[in-house]
Amino acid sequence: MKRPDGRKPEDLRPMEAKVGVIENATGSAMFRIGNTIAIAGVYGPREMHPKRLEDPEKSVIKCYYDMYSFSVPERKRPGPDRRSIELSMVIRNALEPAILTKEFPKSGIDIFVSIIQADAGTRCAAITAASMALADAGIPMKDLVCAVACGNVRDTAVADLNKEEEDVELTTDIPIAYMPRAKKITLLQADGDLTAERFKEALKLGIQGCEQIYELQKKALREKYQVSGEMIEDKD
Ligand code: CDP
Image (tube, rainbow, N blue to C red):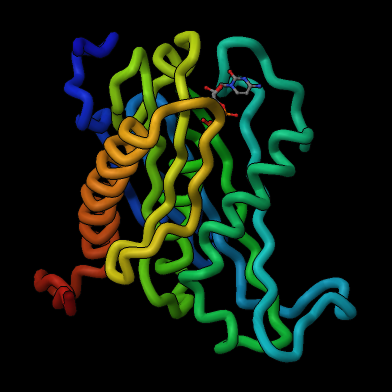
């Protein structure tokens, strides 16, 4: 099957990742996949406000997803809406299993993700960028989290749907977030019908895609933390 932009079913769009893009954040990162661009900034661990929300056992993770007004063809009204509140929760829940929250009791970790350009798959790009930003902030994690949307378009399983594909009638979009070392899925959603067979195929492509994204995340982190010309050893 020919995809609108000429990709094969398993192909991801061209990607770019950079760590350390916001001077004032504890950690930050940019991730681009095709025409979708996410910027993430992590602040903390820091004192919780209001104090009554602190947890004596662990750090409280908060996530704020925002899509810029100019990120989509039809101007989006600025500020939070139902979609951004839901996506903030979904992104937070996909990242939390990787974070060793018990290392910082009574503190808060705030994750801000801005989508500056959107062409489908923004929640996944947000997770990928935020995970690199958490690592850049020096927050201990079990694993990085990488994410990509896969799905079923015209009865074919594909990886990394763009907006044109997402808009095809009866398309099923399946965003996946994955911890590659633990081989655990931390987000799995599906917004349409599909057969068990197509689902399995899509899931396989999604996990393969996440593994490619993982390599890029590690490369971007190494690029920032390269010490006097030598790469930090990969302990895989
Ligand atoms: O972005 P993601 O696929 O995670 O979430 P979605 O809610 O399924 O949105 C799919 C796509 O619709 C976004 O990535 C944008 O390209 C587009 N969109 C838009 O054009 N205007 C909006 N107000 C919201 C989304």
